[in-house]
Amino acid sequence: MIKTDVVIVGAGPTGLFCAHQLGIIGLTCEIVDNLDKIGGQCIELYPDKPIYDIPSVPECTGEELTNNLVKQIKPFKFNFHLNDRVQELTNKNNNWIVKTTSGKKFQTQNVVIAGGVGSFEPRKFPTKSAEKFDGTSVLYSIKDKSIFKDKSVAIFGGGDSALDWAIELSNTSKVSLIHRRDEFRGTSASVKKIKELSKKNIINLFTKYSIKDVKGNGSLEEVEIKSEEGEIKILKADYVLGFFGLIMQLGPIAEWGLNLDKKVIPVNTENFETNKKGIFAIGDICTYPGKLKLILSGFHEGALAARGCFKYAKPNEKYRFEFTTASNTIKNRLGVKE
Image (tube, rainbow, N blue to C red):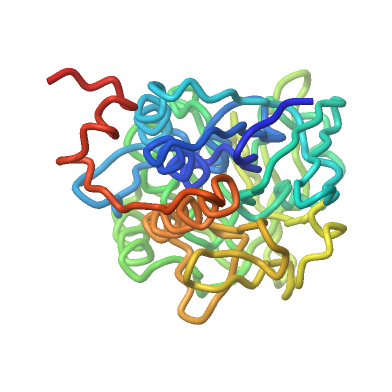
């Protein structure tokens, strides 16, 4: 049995910054994530994709953001339990007993759920022929954009991910963008850029088309698309990318007695506690009036949740707010030398 002040469920940016805030105020934590790597959706879905809305950081990738957050919490020597999932949560004598699928047990006064959208998997192409290339030439996320250099890439989808990657990869690849409608769900700036690139023949744009077949002898060679009117086109393709969103599953979280609202968890905005004492939810998985699904909002939520954990972890101590610039205690925890 591992005893700790807090168990954080989820090692994405929000969970990592919450861990930093816990360390700042002198609490211990263990971090569990069902992925095999740290970073959550940032690493799983867009490690190379630029992020533009982190305060004071004009541009960074999901991987860069993750690496910096990990570096930030390094002084606290927190433990990560990756490729593992919290399966069971029970209360015993005002402590939460947390059990994972690998058999680990934690005893803690606090649980912070920072699991993003829960367990997720991409929506896949309906055509059976795509399955034999799944994970090699048919992909639903991009981990290394360099593999597409000088290749023919067919991108399916009409949201931000499809548009952004079409624009990005058009710099080094021959890109075709296929969408089943004329209208796109992406931002107006991205839609405008796509149409400009199409007019310049930098991107081949096909609207009101959907995938019909994927063909190749050993390796992927071409993709067959079909219009609403039944017209068939054959496109040369070394890679096919599908961006149709995610199928979100809460998994075991749904069995923990929380007041769920359409697969998200309502919280108060004082400390982001749920209806269960000592269980907090932050990031995309929580909801409250005015909620914005932004990483910077998750940072704010994690900071307040950490302070909420303090009163349960150290009930006989009074929490005293200190600025990191002035507190010698915090500097000592961070290993800062004067």
